[in-house]
Length: 218
Length: 117
Image (tube, rainbow over all chains, first blue to last red; front, side, top):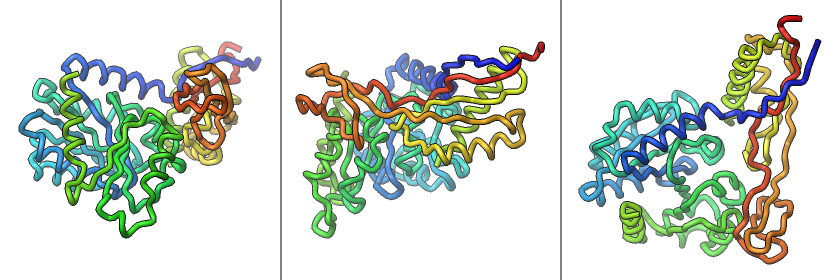
């Protein structure tokens, strides 16, 4: 006989379970972890390069760099002075999941680091579904992308704690309204902490570094 | 875009449950997908058909229920539907909104035969 059987289980419960284990391990080791997400080309790798070069001596930073193909981003981060960089090539998959992070952590001595940066695959849709065990998501948008990004990808902006508006040096050449962008972001997530910066020109980076340092004293 | 990976997770979860509960011939899987998950029902349906083709679930029907986004204002306590992903309270204009539904990605139930039949 056929019967209706209640399951009531999250589809991603296995991912969430691994993510919870990762979070616990990181917290036991007093490691602050940030998951960087954005469209391709918003400047995640550039921001991380600058951040490692500036803060790498003060804070022991570990990096997990995800890419669909190639280890180019991981190589850039190593060249910037990142001593502890672990590349993850997803081989076509559009997001990182908790299992990949767990595997990457096997090759990382958690006692050596105080901060973990995870550079997700460039994609504003899929990575939003996957908890990686991070403390918070940092979403980047660049001014060349349009000020309506938060409204187009609400799930990602809703689940992020920080938004970085990058490439502000290009503002004179773009139809990007900073106030509109901020308002659109806050409509989706009123708790977002917002930074404006130009990784290339250096504007706004000091505020970002200060904020990162403040996370270490919490 | 990641609907195929989500479909694979559904298949794995259901096959695990079927084994645990000693179920055979799963006829239907009912899932709840919140509107805030950015998962496209048609793409999930397609992904499920592709991913289940070579499994015991090849003939199983996937039923997708879309759940609208609702929120509760933490300032005034009112509950309301969130239209077009604007998380602002329509009563007091507060931005401090708790999501009460729309975040789901759950397997609700399955319809199956008992293996002992």
